[in-house]
Amino acid sequence: MLKHNHDECIENALTAAQEICAARDTRFTPLRRRVLELVWVKHEPITAYEILDLLSEGQKRVAPPTVYRALDFLIEEGFVHRIESLNSFVGCSDPAHKHQGHFLICTKCSNVTEMNEQSLHDVIKAAAKANGYSYENSILEIAGICENCRN
Amino acid sequence: MLKHNHDECIENALTAAQEICAARDTRFTPLRRRVLELVWVKHEPITAYEILDLLSEGQKRVAPPTVYRALDFLIEEGFVHRIESLNSFVGCSDPAHKHQGHFLICTKCSNVTEMNEQSLHDVIKAAAKANGYSYENSILEIAGICENCRN
DNA sequence: TAGTGTCTTGATATTTTATAACTTTAAGGG
DNA sequence: CCCTTAAAGTTATAAAATATCAAGACACTA
Ligand SMILES: [Zn+2]
Ligand SMILES: [Zn+2]
Ligand SMILES: [Zn+2]
Ligand SMILES: [Zn+2]
Image (cartoon, rainbow over all chains, first blue to last red; front, side, top):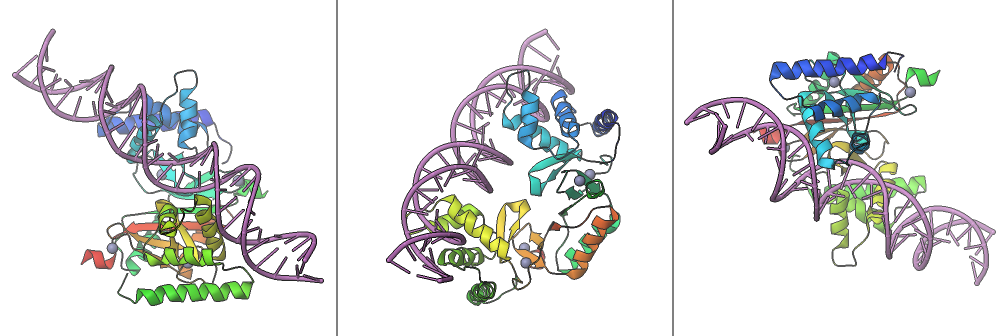
């Protein structure tokens, strides 16, 4: 992840989510907002139980369903993606357009880059069709070393 | 999965594994053989605990590490792939050449088709490079409906 | 404003998936 | 046969996710 103002980064994500929910008439409750914020605070994949720990700081410990339900909502709305190979979650870089995320994962620094490339989607859909399958969705998670870490 | 003689299917997988291990001087023990057989018996992804149950039939119940260690070996040797999105395991369709598996998963019948297409690998590697990442490995799991189930 | 239905969150318990750590057994080389 | 190492057994626990029921918040309307 290149240098950036991360506070602004978080703020943008929260504002975008707020607006999208208003437009869709879905409820961006304080809890959901807080969980989305926590997903963004760490600019890396975060696990449900890490979120749970952060959420519990300075108050009665929350239970797992609280976190999982909020994550379900955020994923459903397209604000968060799940990284299957890491049992973790990341904020979506393009929440305005619901989509399936395709990811690059750095095995050194754990940073994740989301690829929003139509051509990649097209190739994957074509592969499904070529093998006689209809296409519903796909997960693509590429492990490698990011540019920063190679220098 | 099209009609086929599944007993033969299993037998082929076991024979191939046996020969590859002999060539590599790795140990294809009775337990590992049995676990590989169980992975193949169900021509669908199978979970570690399903294997555990089958393995325990008619004898003292085996413990999880027994299964997970056998699976680790089989994956390492390239005889089995893990399906991340299902926490499950499938036999590899081309064990002679170690590789990363790319899969089509039918959401109706749960059948899985392994794609061994170089062009797909090339596109994925190119996507990594285009985003500044080196390539180590990748998982691609496409969900859809197979040809059989659509008819 | 009280009643009603729906969505959200809280709370408790349990299930599912996976690994750590240590012991015992088996295999292979001299 | 002795020694070393790899494999399998054993016990316990960690990590990830879900089921179920209760309580609260909210909006609609009667
Ligand atoms: Zn996204
Ligand atoms: Zn990196
Ligand atoms: Zn394969
Ligand atoms: Zn099918």
